[in-house]
Picture 1: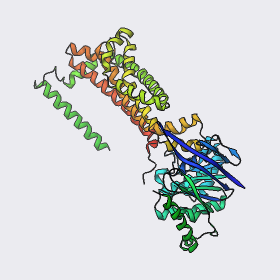
Picture 2: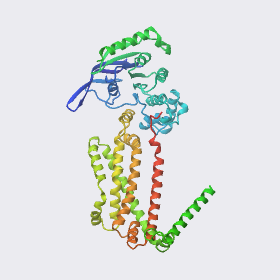
Picture 3: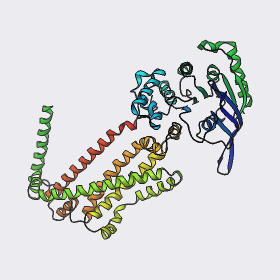
Picture 4: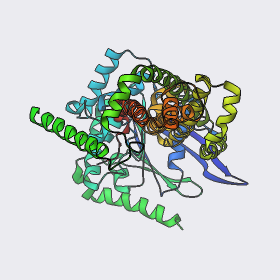
Length: 254
Length: 251
């Protein structure tokens, strides 16, 4: 049962007289409960794609359906979003930031506070509820970002290169952490990254994109069994998938 | 603590004593620098007049600050909301800011008379531009990622403004208020000195022409006290909003 349906989507932008096509006829779907990743070189339109699925931008042609609906505006109850820089509000505490979507939705203070506390516990930050973003490490800020994305208990979590600003050690750790959270919450995740290792380690299915114009050139099912301990990245199966993506991407890059 | 206070009192008295001796000894002309006792004498004889004038000035400044803040914030917020128009508005505001507004004062005198109204209009005008400009720039400087985030989290237009844009612009807005408020004080006092019938500025001007240096210095002291008071208030404002200046990415 697919929950995200992207059909013949084209997105072009015009800059002055010129128009350029960021996304050229993309079709794919993601089944409910799956962890799907879009991987591709920078500038291939990954983020644009995510914005359209999130109801923040309209395709030039084609259609995007989420849960069977064409979205004309963001739907935080259906889709939670996590951003590249955590983009937390600097004057709000970790707790306040997780509460923010609930505050916007008019949820009363007590309810949203206990919900936010619950989510901070889920991401392992219950003791940091009163800390401000500048008092947290990059990884912790992203955890807050994930908790905030889950605030309305959405069906889908869209994640736009959430760990790209972290060092490798933290990145690996956050990957494991995300899988743990995913296991608990069972959201459908659409994850964007340009790290091949991250893509293979996390996903059930990987959509490989090429750049300018952005197209999906291959869909790869990752049949590595779960749970996946970190050592899985040393296995032959893992390496084979990683290399295949590498050749796909490097083959089309100028 | 007590010892420090005592030391301070002794120092102050010593300086005042030296100053008194310098003037009384004829080393400095009384027209240039009055002895402290002259200022005390002025305060004894004209203190009540100065106090009354002080209230007039305070009233003019208070009204001017209120109007300059409201107009500056409102127009900055509105202009900041119009991405294309804001570019034009911004450059108009900054070029107007560069005009020495004092040239307009004679016109304000003709329009609004010798009383408080012309001082208030002039005070508002001098303080308005930095407030409006900083508000506009503060709103425009908010990074797009915050807007995308807020929209994705379900913010409507009002929430986007009140809960995201405005707080993010606060550091810039507060510094605009700081500059603008200081300029209001200058504007009002200058206007009083140029042409008026009341207020501290008027008394300073008036006594200067009569060479009552003691009274002139008494006027200085009132003005300085006023400036210190207002500065205190602004520092408090800055302190209260300092939480909004915290940077997210400062590891």
